[in-house]
Image 1 (cartoon, rainbow, N blue to C red):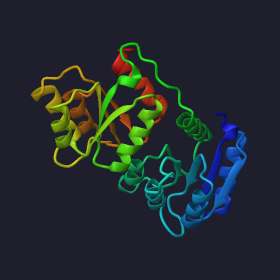
Image 2: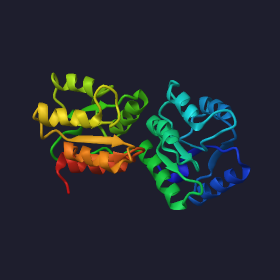
Image 3: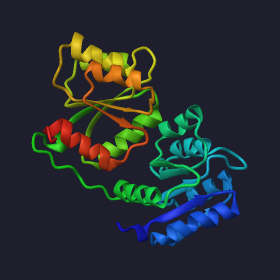
Length: 264
């Protein structure tokens, strides 16, 4: 798919901001753009004509972007729509729920045109992904365990992995459940969140590496954690790679090549 083929639904209450974003999109060769000013109008539009990408402000007159995205993720045949946030919001607690819901990008206001272009190309990568071709594994036979207490986050990670050609995916809602699964089943890759109840991601890594004595299975952590000391402890525990939320399919592809095929 080419960028010019993208259909975009823009949700922006500010007329000035809406015109600015449309101008940037047109500079990228995108002209199939519908604009609305609130969440309810957006949802009605999505039900009739699902776009390839939704670009939204955080705070709308009738709901937040987080509430809208959560509603979309719970709607049959609409949960896979790509969602980009453009917002001046910087509070971690405010942004974390929408990260967990699976946005492809969070851009600041004002945003850099290059960042918008990169996010648009990420959208194309989601829609028309390139299946991975591994040297050490048949991608269709790869067995992956996804561990996250958010069902929305698990589904988002599953969609990305499936788009790369991975078919055998098992979910777990926390580290404790994952540990039980790992005692009876073998996996080629573990993808885990950090902050979870009962057993968090670091404790799960320590369980796999120390109690199970498994030093070889790659463990990929997907997290929005910003505490360097905590991330350092995760590194010490034996994680294979850490990737930020939200993440791009291309970055996941590159990390998987590295941890599964030992490409440096």
